[in-house]
Image 1 (cartoon, rainbow, N blue to C red):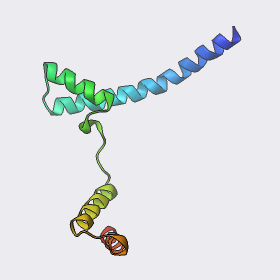
Image 2 (image 1 turned 90 degrees about the vertical axis):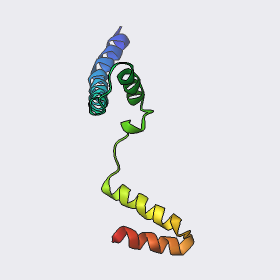
Image 3 (image 1 turned 60 degrees about the vertical axis):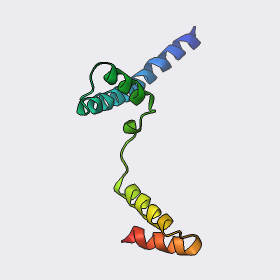
Image 4 (image 1 turned 120 degrees about the horizontal axis):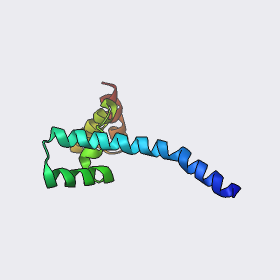
Length: 96
């Protein structure tokens, strides 16, 4: 009996945290669907993908540092840099 009460208590305690996260995700996905003017079946399909996390648009945007890193990495690859020259290029690119 004590074990059941403890389990129920833990579940009730954990549910609000999970619900908040799901609510936040639902709000974000719904806002994005509204921005895209999706209606009917398109809206339904988008929400399903977004809430499952399989949609690219559901992912958060890159931070400025991540965007800079991505661009520097792309530039280094375009110049076919490897080893120490690549490290030096990346260091200079990320500082500037």
